[in-house]
Image (cartoon, rainbow, N blue to C red; front, side, top):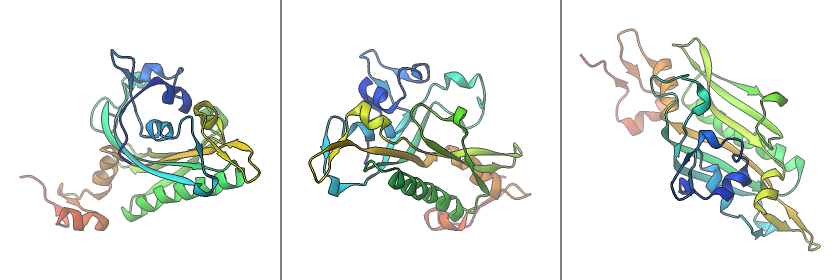
Length: 233
């Protein structure tokens, strides 16, 4: 899906971004907000609806321009393209039945999708399990996937993979009907698919040669039409 980046307040409250993260959002004079992730509009798509159990899990691959004020970053990463106010992002979002076992299975699946992407790009990375104090509102479990940044001699986050049980679905009133007619709230999950231009930092730094040229990862050579980006002399 290509989802709107300007979204009403209700999906932000439903997904847990409001009211506590309001300072990090851009707000229009009409009271709408610019989303920092396609997750918000994707979850809002089934707001106040009852979905068919046979259709679960519902898997979104959503794209939108994203906007973040980065109000809480306190000047961090103000130079370069790693942290910017407007960027492009693809997001994985899933609605599934109200089963912890199903949530865990799908959480590992969307995390593996992100890992496979980094493996195709041959980027060194690690997967970090967040402690309870680092979980966002409503998150039951979260992995951060971080790729190596040679210039900083550390790993930096490229993906964040979370599941929420029915926290978001209750706030958005997204339900499904069991075979006996009982209405239950869905579970929800999300994970970055690809955030641009952030990941370009790791691609460039891990493939730059001593002469300044950049070896293009094999997975991207067909799209680029070349193997190397030569240094501009």
